[in-house]
Amino acid sequence: MTKFNATALAGLMTGGLLMAATPAMAQEPNRGTQPGRTQQRPAAQQEQAAQQGAQRRYNLSRAEQNAINPLLAANTAANDAPAAGQTADWAAVQALLPAAKSAARSVDARYLVSRVELSIALGTNNLAGQEAAIAALLANESTPAPEAANYRNAQSSILNRRAEEAFQANDFATAERLFQQLLQANPNDTRLQGNLRATQIRMGNTGGALQGINEQIRAAEANGGRASEDLYQRAWQIPHNAGQRAEAIAGLQRLLAAYPTTANWRAAVDVVRARDNDVQYLIDVYRLGRIANVVQAEEYVPLANTLVQASYFGEAKALLDAGIAAQTIRADQPDVSRAMTQIRDRLAQDQAGLATEITEARGSGSARQARNVGDALYGYGRYAEAADLYRVALTKGGEDANLLNVRIGASLAMAGQRAEAETALRAVTGNRGEIAALWLAWLNRRQG
Image (cartoon, rainbow, N blue to C red; front, side, top):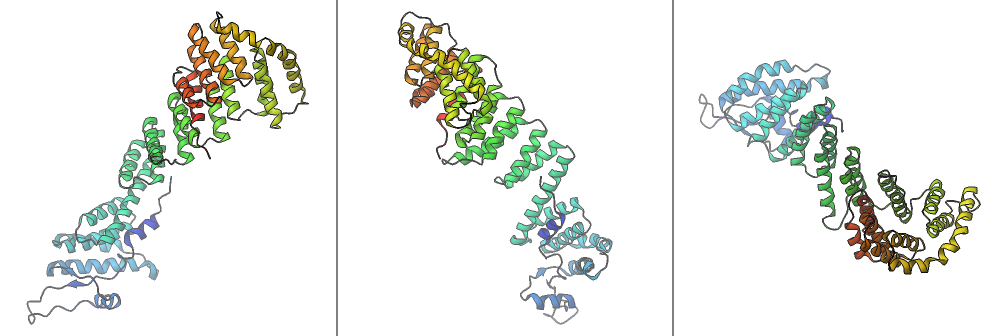
């Protein structure tokens, strides 16, 4: 959180105004003198008026002048004291306040008194006094508009200080309320938005934090744009850390659609892979990881062995070939060489019997047989045919519909049939719904 700067706040609130000498005032006629004549202004007022030219004049009664002039003079002396190497006598200024406040009836008089109250509060580091004086000045119609703008900024600075102090004191309810109040006046302040989210997370209000982030993302995407990558990262990390997987996956979808980087895809695949250790589930995750190009060097051989164990020899070879082509692994590595030898020994036989297996699977074969043939076709890059066999398996029953729909969707996505792929993927529920969500993100990824 941003640290509060008292010196900067003092400058913002005063804007040099409270350090001025006694302001020029419109005088009431002195009934003991000739009509039309006014009392002579103090020397300090005359000097200031000469320096500033057309000085603002205040409409004060005689009683108001008599009570406020000493207050203003004492205030000026206190403000000037540090420059002269002296200690400001704020007690002397404070002692004159009651009489001035009692005499102040007009808006101008109340304005001047509030200005001095603010000066005292600044000089004595009285935050509550600063708030009260600023509120009075903002409520006073005599306060000039440019000056009021400074006071509104100062008011926000004080609220921000209070909010940050509440956060540091673990009073998150107060911090949340104050940050929300600040955001009402500054809805596009990203620092305040971040502070509010941090507060809500600390108080366990994950939903509140996530709602604010998603609103920012939606606003950025409204006209075809995108939010900052940091916002998308938070949109999945916050619910993920809170154990809210559905919200985390939804956040990952948005992140990958907007920022389909290798690092983001790797994070997404890791999150989904941790969901289930079933071999068929891991194969589905691996296929996604391969398309996203996030398979790492140490993973190629274990993944190839998993595919071999499932009798997906064509896919195992395609995986290792891709790793070698990308120079992520080397063909002469002992483990790679052994895996390749084992694959080649079975590959010719697998390919030779594939046509017969396709015919049998389309006929009276079981759903499992049709799914296995679909998997073999996927491994050889025959994606449209693979999707067709998966559909055959789906009509026979006896196989997990979610597994089949993921593979139908993946096959159609690889075949370039986007609309049909999305239909299949949106039908997936349960654990594999997370894999389907990431396939949808790949289909909808931002190009360029």
